[in-house]
Amino acid sequence: MSNTKFLKLAEVFTYLEKTSSNLAMIDILADFFPQISSQEAKITAYLLRGNLGPSYESLDFGLALKMTVKAIAYSEKIDIKKIENLLQETGDLGLVIEEFKKNKKGKGLSIEEVFKKMIEIAKIGGEGSQEKKIIYLADLLSEVSGIEAKYIIRMILGTLRLGVGEMTFLQGLARAFGKGKEQKEILEYAFNILSDLGEVAFVVSKWGIKKIGEVEPKVGVPIRMMLANRVENLKEVSKHISGNVSVEGKYDGERIQAHIKKNGEISLFSRQHENITHQYPDIIKGLKESFKGKEAIIEGEVVAFDKNENKNLSFQILMSRRRKHKIEEYVQKIPVRYFLFDLLYLNNENYLNKSLKERKFALEKFFKKTKNITFAEYVITDNFLKTENYFNDSIKKGNEGVMVKDFSGIYQAGTRGWLWIKFKKEYEKDLADTFDLVVVGALYGSGRRAKTYGSLLVASYDPETNEYYSFTKVGTGLTDENLAKLPKILDKYKLENKHKLVKTYMNVDVWFEPKIVIEISGAEITVSPVHTVAENKIKTTGKQGGLALRFPKFLRLREKTPEDTTTVKEIYELYKGIKKRN
Ligand code: AMP
Image (cartoon, rainbow, N blue to C red; front, side, top):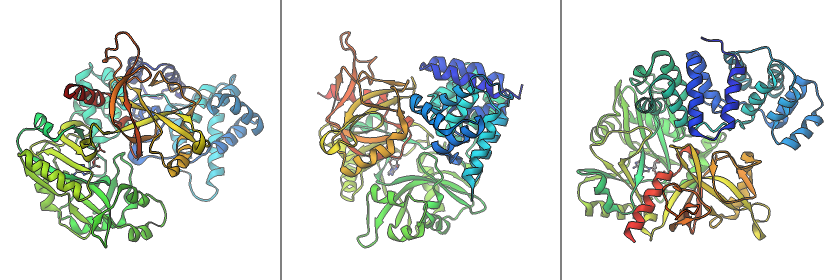
């Protein structure tokens, strides 16, 4: 079964690239996976999404466009100028190398061989590493055919863009190794615990669906975080949760999952499962002092704080701690506190299926307050007035709002359900609401914005269809500082044409790959002929168009993945709720 050729995978990539249909992608994956070994399934899971491993251990190639051009020049023995000219024409270095190698056959390297060589290139570090990387890459390119080289180059440049969403991938696996929906739920559960599509693919292909349903959390491997739904009005909480709730301050910081191993080693993971341990040596020290058990996985919000005034500072200030150098200097400059609110694993015991009551009890028993480790404040109640008062107090203390959690609810990893509900102060203002949306296009500005983008076209992701639906165009709220930053952030994702998974009737000056997530507020959801959110659910008497946000205002850049935006379903539910109230 093993030793599948990389060429075969490149052909699968070609089929995937050509389609924008979720069902077709699932078919292609379901057909391919049973033909390959478990190890190949694992590698394929990473390569399909342009990665070399799970997100929490991600490896970068560390090769910029110029260097990659050099490698092609070496391997194909052609002049750099010639490559650059063709690159100008096509805008895609992958197509360029495919053209140069049109008539050349490869050596027939296997998936595992190509992967090993790519890992090797990524791992080269230290002095002279760029030259060495170029030589290794040139060597690899010289051994493969045009179509293989095309995808290798795109992977190295981060421009693979096959558009296989996480859920699409899991649906493909479910069809390959099971019968469908029920199996997909088991796979999704395993993915939520392991945060690693490669590991899920490996286990299911080696041992089958039953085994994958038995996975347990592992200290050191991030668990996908539980998310909250929103309500428009605090009173609506009772529609979803009966009995006691824990009403907690919603702190404006960074959510961090801390993993404390038996040997004392501690790792910190961001919401995107990035390992950010090096950024918070002060938190590591605090946790060592605070923890009284053997091993644990806990969660909380890290917030910047003003020592003199003894008050919390905004998320923006905390973000200046996001750095590779001068960490110790910033530990002093911007002190932080870690507000713990959950415990997922303790001393060899899985706590995910225990109630919040039990989880909080264990958290408070096994951690003690230190200078910078503390607990998120909360009150337990079943009384609406008490919840409302707590919300008002929380706002006065500078929090964003409250999180209301079912006190008897379990921890639903990776799920946005109704066991946790968020209510922010913005929601109180007439219909104002905030959305996390992904930038898919932009229009050039005029006047003060002449050199940059004047407005951004943003979209919401639908995990069901694996497509992005445009929701609004936002220009208001962009400060000069943000305007200057935008091209730097967005231009690496520029596309020649609209991304195949983006659905909109709007035209823009520049299209982007859906990558960058921003938070915006808006005051009204209406039906528009140019936007497409929930278009299939909105009856516009035969006319085209879906839901759109009016009076949008840019709030901030978010550290989220495009697949973690406010979903089409959430927007539609909001729209239905608002319509009913009017
Ligand atoms: P949002 O990002 O608006 O969907 O809100 C959810 C986020 O609120 C979480 O991911 C946390 O970063 C943050 N948060 C702040 N305080 C709490 C809390 N007490 N419980 C859970 N999440 C919190």
